[in-house]
Amino acid sequence: MKRVAIVLLVYLMLPGCVSQSGNVDGVTWYNPATWFSGVAGRKAGRIEAKTDEARGKALKQAQRAVKETEQALNAAPVSRSVQVAQASNDQASGLLDQLAGPMTVDELALVREQVRLLLSDIESERTEGARLRESNNNLSSKVSETLGELAAAKAKNDQDLAKAFERENKLANDLRNERWWSWFWRISIGTIAVLGVAAFFYVRLSLGGMPTALGRSLVSARKENPELARLMETHLDVNLTPKEQSMIRLITSKVS
Image (tube, rainbow, N blue to C red; front, top):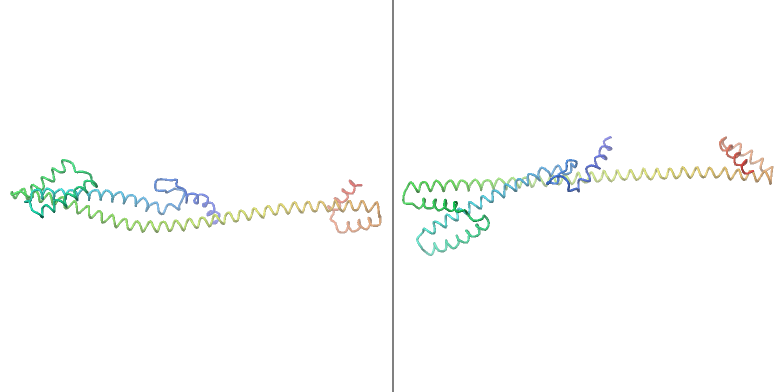
């Protein structure tokens, strides 16, 4: 009973092992061979989406920090060191603008206001500027922490995905073996059936031809050698079954 159930499942499961049908994750409800990696695959997609979002936020924070440095350098006294720092900062700013997209006018205005407050001679303004800077630093820390957590989650999910693929490959191999044995037994049974039918008809034809030959021989013997005919009849009556004797009589009556 167990083997029959497995063989029936083969026809439902195995085609799905190579099928691309199902949802976007390649998971099909009728194919258990895709269930293992389906969960890990969907989780991998979610982790990747969250990672992309966190990277975007990290780029924005880095861009903001570069713009803050730009504003501070512009307010610093001119010196060789400031010029070198400005050149390097301008290069970083251009690259970040390409990656993260240019900052809006309002965002740049907030950056300028924060730097102005930090450089102010008024203590209350410097305090407000420090508060704004701390708020941005906390946001940057959270983004960095999120990226770290996502990296750890991705590493663990990759391990789960590898284990799932291993289980799927094992199941697929088991199903292929079951299908091979199923076809083997079908072919074997079919071959035996064909041979049995052929043997049955061969025997029927062979047995049907022998009474005909014996009947004709008996008719010839009666005409040419009656003693031989009587001897044949004696042996035939002893060795043949009633059905075979009936066949001989029927043939001899037709031939004669």
